[in-house]
Length: 121
Image (tube, rainbow, N blue to C red; front, side, top):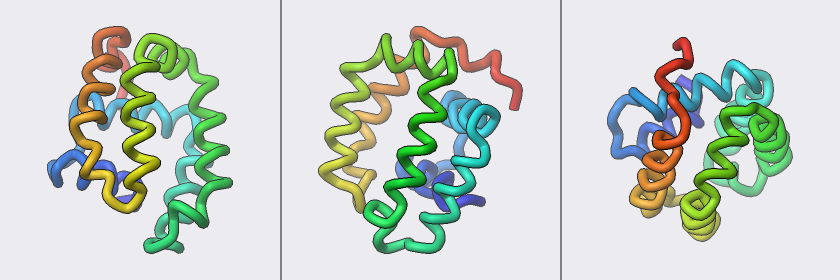
């Protein structure tokens, strides 16, 4: 399993990815797979300093994913929730578990506006 997916799983409390979280990752994989792989590989290569060493790969992945219509909708409709989560993540790059409440609020918002169940896994 790619490190980024492990991080997300750990971030969600150690449970396997399922439902909207897994579907969101699958959406990004389908649209931006090479950038997700590059970012994941960088994280694997720099496990202690990925938040510093993988900024370029993170930016490419973010740019690619923002072009997808579903992600554009989420970004527009849930910008406040994402902003709160993003601030927490930036303040706790090595301890994303501290942002689980913010992440779940963002996920709940995204689920209200986008039917992620239509994404084929």
